[in-house]
Length: 458
Image (cartoon, rainbow, N blue to C red):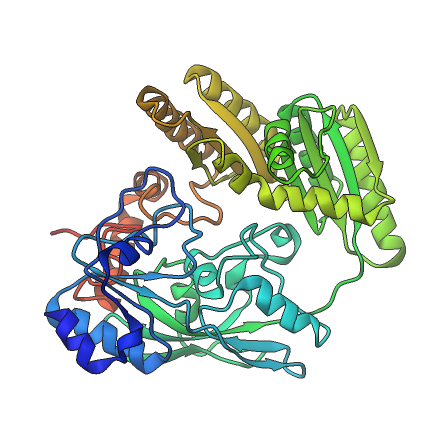
């Protein structure tokens, strides 16, 4: 048995065999994504130990699911019946922060915010900042190619990964990428692993590039009576040529849920709040803030102003980060993650409202509005199966609408289990065949997170 093998190869404290404890590692935060029962959870500390786990899974034909902090929202980290879950939580060392080369080398279990704090001590900054940054890990961010609030200006995880150390589906420990600022030798295999959701390799080390710390941000807030008006403001900002450091949408339902949970005093007289930020220094920052304010007003904002109180501005952005867990306290939440061209944001928001009405489903809205990445949150009462069925229908309708508008089924949460049909709708059969060929080449035994993202012929 694989358990016997791993008992002999790994220290005892690396293995979790108690079924009740193992069950707590069996899934991520994706509502209604199926999850299996693992035979074992392994928590390695070194790359060599990861390699031992992968090779044991190959020998025994046992599926392996790699897990970071379990904050994912697509079922990508959900266990498979009879499989092994590999948790990277103990591989949490920051191995190097290099201020000359502006890079950091970390284990996959390092929490995003911990890396950002360590970089800040040296005047450096790691930009990708998903809303789960206080809890999610760099390895998980790499797996899903996570974005975040500032990706509208600074890009997503793939834009910052220079190199990876990984264990392949054949059990080899290899290094991909480079530490240099430039390098075009060979295929971009490191880039291929980013966003592959543990289906092509197990990440054991990540080298990321860093930026200098930013200038203080200016914040502009606007209240709107509809999500469509707020969407028009987003389109206008893009047309004006302004690239904000953040442009976030959050509706009244989300603010009320955060307020009820954290008592932050955020109740506002608006159905939708749009939050814009500029980190451009000096007059350029003032110009961007003023332009955003004008766009808010011309799009129909009922109130708009540049914040003079940094504490209040930070509280609004903190509410944006807390929206999902706050709503989750009210009942099961099915989270969408579609992305459309910026010009299509108003129409997509209108279609989300129509999907809610057509399916009698309560949908709250948060969004990285500046880059068209929308996160409708479909909320259902606990135990209401009819509401669940309607919410799933709305979920599929929103995916279809996003594709119809030239968008994509996921901007940053990944495909996992929930979006496999959507991926097949988005990509041509020829491109799906290319995906399967890559999977079969790098994971010929089909042990790495099988059934996620794409399915192989049996």
